[in-house]
Image 1 (tube, rainbow, N blue to C red):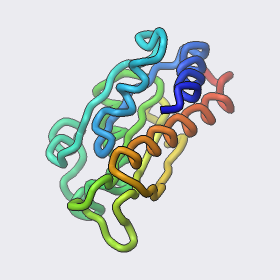
Image 2: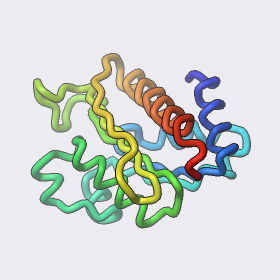
Image 3: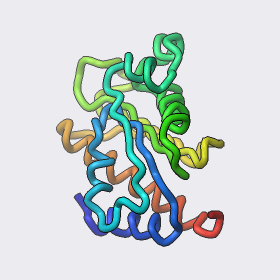
Image 4: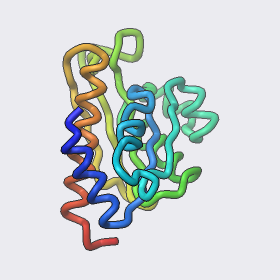
Length: 166
């Protein structure tokens, strides 16, 4: 884990007095646990939800079953839906949702192979501020760590550009 990226991102959150929450599927809480290690994380980290199974996405986050059936649990559409669902249950300035395929046995296809990850960020329940689909390679842990770095980069980039907006 590149602590310097995490520490810089946490510093931006603290300086801008911005709070954050996560809905994590494929990363299973790894991103939130990394943020919990940052100094004074209690000042910006509100919490999160691991929604690995589709029933949690549906029952807790309010994702319609039809959306999951149409697009699969690992998709941009479902990632946006879990992010919006999270914004209704955990108050925060920024909500980030993550789905994807770290191992075989999900909805992988030749067009969406194992390693495909989806990340969505929204501010105060509004329009997405970033939405990324990336395909990583490696072991499941390497895919998750690459996704952590992606989230750190997207979040840091957004905070650098929009630091005066709070």
